[in-house]
Image 1 (spheres, helix red, strand yellow):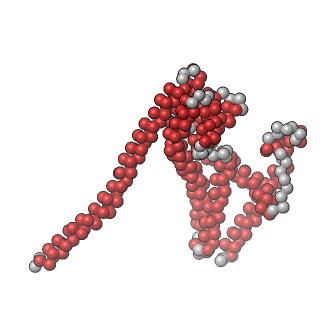
Image 2: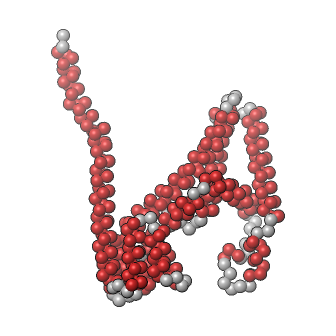
Length: 313
């Protein structure tokens, strides 16, 4: 390894350590709202978990996280200002059923970017960056790797949203039938939701559990169902929640409404299955047209071509 690369590596390590120390010092000098209010509400029985004192730890990782967290949060805030799209990320996090907020997602993007930069940097130290005149170009490659890692984290969130919605669509007919049977048996809307949540496990029961939790904290069931319809990315779920809420609000017989909604759900599931089958049929034609048919034609025409070459003078 050349002296230039050694100097660059040592300078990068020293600069990172200096940034972490300065970030920690600036964070400790500036009192937060939590540190100012927490001494006055510690005797409140209903105090939130976030206001409780943190138990000290002797693990080296906890000290490293205490030093690195302010710098990572600052980088996450800067990334938020650069990229933007806070409302879109919040919407996708809700559709994916994730418990983290936008700040936590930005922090995970920063961690992914640092990991991509570190991997590219280590690869450069082992091989390409050791050549003369390649250090600066490989530094640009490291920065590009960090940007790609950040975009991959965003793409991973989109894939989580698609997977979560596919799971909801697969569970929806059974959950709608169970909810209809519970209401037809004489249970109220909240009791029917509680029975479905206690009997089922999955993405859609988790969403209904959130509706049930909101209703138990004093929010009307119709408003909780409207919030489910607004945060859902699936039109069929939004229609079902809106129809359920309208039936409760206007006093319409729930059994008839839920029966009609369940029929619509099953028809939509059939249409989705037919559309998936049509797409899979087109996809199955690709190996037939580009692989099996050329090989078949080759086996059919090759003996004739060889025979003509033998007979030709």
